[in-house]
Length: 305
Ligand SMILES: [Zn+2]
Image (cartoon, rainbow, N blue to C red; front, side, top):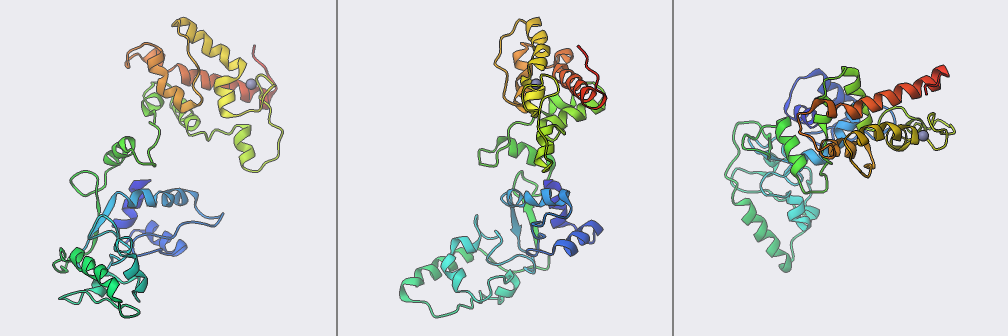
């Protein structure tokens, strides 16, 4: 998703970009507005939601100054000028001016709404100190720079690595891609495991989230509500399948709470090497079996023992 944001910001004359520009309008000179209506393309909506995360890993490099916002883009310091000098920003009459509109060739053209008081002069001094590192505009276009890595260009690899190692709030739980995509099983089963880990499989729990009224009941045990974690991990019927394998390896374990956690710990609890293929495919096999059984009971009224 971050790659599409990068393409949106750096690409010109691409039809898909023009369509999004026209449909959602631009929020600033770099990005389209957030999708707030219940309608519209859900793929772009999800991509656009990652904009703050993406933006925190970029900075802007000023060339001709025509695109970079003087106050609101991060280009001369670690933070935007709006964040560094909120008082000046409030007083400034052209808050969305570009760098080019502010630069006179020799200095900065500040249009403040009133004269500054004595006690505000410190702000102006600090402002000019910060701006002293700027030399001049060039003929090149302004561009966005990816801060992760040395090349300044976005790559999926660098973004993935950074998100996994980041200590910030947007840290993702380690995504168990090796357990999902490496097992050599039918591709549709890999895909199914992926959708389970994403929690988008159409269980009754997820159907209810789409505002369908139904009385949720697990097709296997007929005792509890059908949620992903119940059906595929904790249901007493499914549990028997897990026990077959845990007793084979003589392991005692507290079953993880959700699918991703299970995938992340599966290799370790099996006391196995990462290369052992047979052990790796067990979760996917159990889940596929459970899913087929559930669907048979639901749609064909057939029950296997
Ligand atoms: Zn059940």
